[in-house]
Length: 134
Image (tube, rainbow, N blue to C red; front, side, top):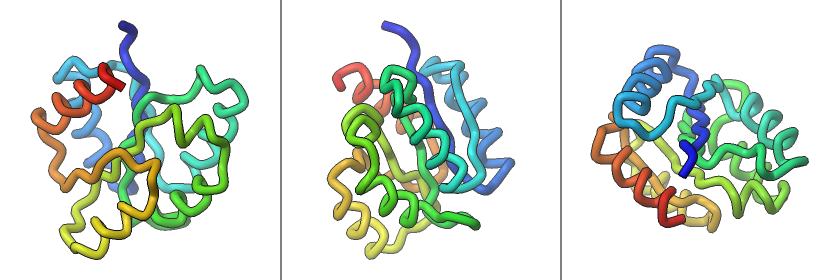
């Protein structure tokens, strides 16, 4: 199986760098793209959706970001191309432990998971299993 493409969407530069090192060291993939906000990743996903095989297999999405936050992105994707909702595993990856955020994430049937930071090797092992069974 080919290694998945992963998009890390977070406004924290240090977190993105640490996540990349962790993802690579876990063996999940070496193909990682970074985005600082929801608008950047939205534009990329919409463009890639024109040829669905170009879409990433996994998106790790922070909630609290400037320009377009994670919730705003999910609202846009709700009415976006089906290829994104069916072909991309989107997992919220956030420092928020607020129950209302977890409950809100369940309103989006295309969200595959909710991970509370910090990202761990155990989280990545679970994601790898889901991608392989997916």
